[in-house]
Length: 540
Ligand code: ADP
Image 1: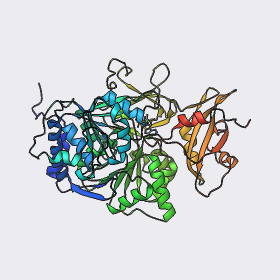
Image 2 (image 1 turned 180 degrees about the vertical axis):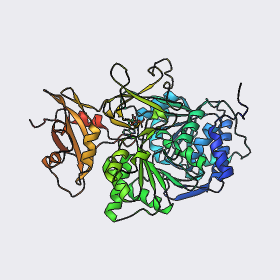
Image 3 (image 1 turned 90 degrees about the horizontal axis):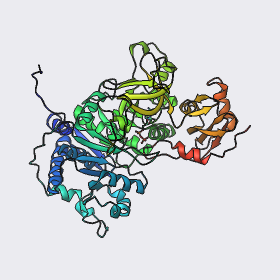
Image 4 (image 1 turned 120 degrees about the horizontal axis):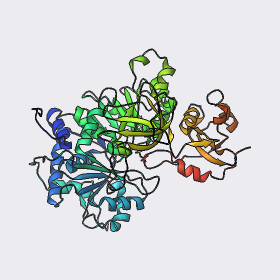
């Protein structure tokens, strides 16, 4: 016997239609590429998304055709999220920080039909346009009069001219909620990037569950700032979650330096902000250097790489709570969050920071386990570390165009992360499997070593990598960027580890660099450091 409730498919258009109707005057604020601030409402966003949907119809796009975006977080990008997916096509967010040849590879693999880009990226688009034969329509996200002549890009039109040619008289179509909605490629640190193809259903289920109070905790009273780019796993779902909650949405455009982000937080009454640790490092430095405080910010969601405890402490000292989230492009992304359980209420501050420094417990819908080399599940004791496997309705089943390549292990997705799970279900990543340091048959967690270094007052950023060693196979080397004007020696840094880790885990050496290379999503690129320091001679 089936239930007798209405059967409405879970579609991405529902989110913007809901916001336009029930939170019509709620604001969407964007810092534009031009530098000024643009402001409108969810009602405006929905009307313009309808115009865009009709423009795509007029281009003759079929269901599931791909529309690429190369854009910062802004209102036009938001309209592409809803106009493209809502009309049954696939919005393909491309990461502009990838090398041009990878962008070309991705566009060809996705067979994008339309390519929309912020004017910032005009030079990149000029360089790649001739190599992207599937693209039939090039669209610059600007006013008609801002479109430069003689770009050499065939048939280039401005977004504003494109949508102005169509009215708002449009009915969002209804279709199977399992239809593809969005496409995002992994950054391809090993081999070519691979496409992760989200459905309407997976996207809505993720948005709803991620918004629960122990997760993103989204409310109509919030002003939400996704500093995480909309090209990085759908801005962690916040461009969907904010209209669902009726929250104000603040989009930072290309200005992601500490000062600009802080000023936007203050000017727009931001209560919740989300981004990778490197972004917050810059903002906290700006605050501390100028003696500033937050007047409205209550919460941060930090993920993408391990959050150093020193950063959690710094935010909490500013009265801002930290939720560490763990996830991947392949998991939409949210899988776990480090929110407290009742038993943590009595912990002192240091104990609380220890809980928050874990990647956290599964959000409903995601299941996880750690397994040994034979694939047998390891106990939840907080000590046994193994490969982390996850499953759930917003976890990948296969990569785009690679459905014939087996990806899952008995229905579980192998994440490539190494982790422990404790008796309360808190997962802690010890490493990416490729970053683990294997010394004399024992594993050293590069994340543990980095977290300790980050607590030293002279350290601005630290990466711990393996260096080949004749006796121990590998030994840890600490690569450090010092804070400006602060002196510290390798010996002092090594002494800082005393009593914090076992002696054999202390890095053998410390090297100072001007900068640590960051990848396309703001994460430290340890593979480049490993290459650079492969022949580093450790002191014997
Ligand atoms: P990429 O870094 O390849 O662009 P993802 O954003 O999908 O792609 O990265 C996912 C990986 O980032 C995870 O497998 C994990 O190694 C790392 N990661 C994400 N969040 C965290 C976290 N909170 N702590 C530690 N590592 C994290």
